[in-house]
Length: 452
Ligand code: PHE
Ligand code: NA
Image (cartoon, rainbow, N blue to C red; front, side, top):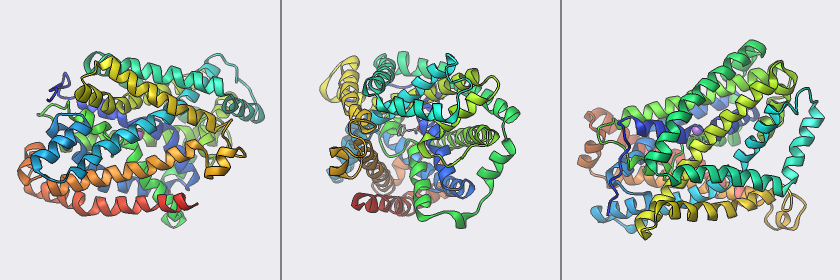
C-alpha cells in the first residue's frame, strides 16, 4: 500500500531537503573540522567530494524515494520485488532507519547545548566573562546529567511535535517559517562578524589551499563530512523524496541542495572564524569551537549577548529542521507497516531514540574517561554511536549508489531524471564506479578506529 502523500508545492521538497541538509553539520561540525584540519585544504577535498560523489548519490537517493513513493524500508522492499533482485537490497532501508535512530539520539543532545547557550546569551550572563569562566561553564554543563537530559528532552520533544503534526501541518508549515528566518539570521551574523571581526583573516584561513598540509585523516574526515552534511545514505532524503512532486527536476534540485548547503557552511565558517580571529582566539579548538571559543568571542564584543543569542537560535533552528528529517523515515515506516497513527509512530521512534540519547548524556559524566565503561570499550558510548554511524552512513550511500546505478533500468532512471543521454551516462558512471570507490575509501577510515 502506498500512502501517496505529496508535498503541497512543487518546490516544497527542496525546502525540506535544504532543511535536512543545513544543520549542526554546517554550523558546528564543518567549522571545527576545517579549523582542526588546516582550513583551505580541507575545504577543497570537501567540495570536490560534494560535487563528484555527493550530488550523484543525492540524485540516486531522491530517485529511489520518488520512484517507490514509500518510506525507505517499505520502498526498498517494493523496489526489490518489482525488480526481482535480491532482498539484500532492503538493507538500504534498515541501515538508514538504524542510522537515523542513532544520529537523532546524539544530535538532540548536542542541539540541547545550543539551547543552554541561547539562554546564557540572551540573559547576558556571559557578558564580559573571561576564558576560564566560559570553559568552566561548559565543563559544568557536561558534568550535569539532569541538565543535559532536560535540554535533550526539550529538543527532541519539540522535533517530535512538528513531525507528529504531519508532513503538511507540521513539517511544511514549520519549515516555511523557519528556513527564511534562518537565512536572515545567518546574514545578520555574517554582516556583524564582518564589521567587528577579522573577515580577511577568516577568508585567508578558509580559502588558502595547501593540499600538502592535509593528513590522510583530514582527507577522510573531509569526505565523511560531505556525506553527513548532505544527509546522505540514511533514508532522510529518500523519505522526503517519496513526497516529491513528479514534475520537479531531480538534477536541478540536487544541485541546489548541495550549493545551498555548501554556501551555508562557508558563510558560517567565515562568520565564526572572523569572530574567533577578531578576538585573537584559536581556530583549532575542536568540538568546543562553538561552545567555548565562540561564546568567549561573544562575551568580549559589543552587542555580544544579543548577537550570540541570535546565533544560537540559528543553530537551534537549523538543528530542528534536520532532526525532523531523522524522525520522518522511521515514523513513516511504522505508519505504513503497522498501521500506527502518526502521533503513535512518532512517539515510538522518539521515545526509543530519547532513551538511547541518555547514553550520550552520560558519556560526558557518569561514563566519561576514567570510568569503567570507558575503559571497557576504549571510548565513550557517544564515541561508539558516532563510530557506528560513520560506518552505516557511507555503507548506506554505497548501496544506494550501487542499486540506483546497476539495478534500475535505463527507462526507470530516465522517467525520473528526464534528461539527455550525456548527463545520464555521466551520472551512471559516477554512481556505478566513482561514488562506490570514494565511499569505500571513506569507509576504510572506520577500520583503524575499530581496532584502536
Ligand atoms: N545534514 C545534517 C547536518 O548537516 C545532519 C543530518 C544527517 C541530518 C543525516 C539528517 C540525516 O547537520
Ligand atoms: Na549540512
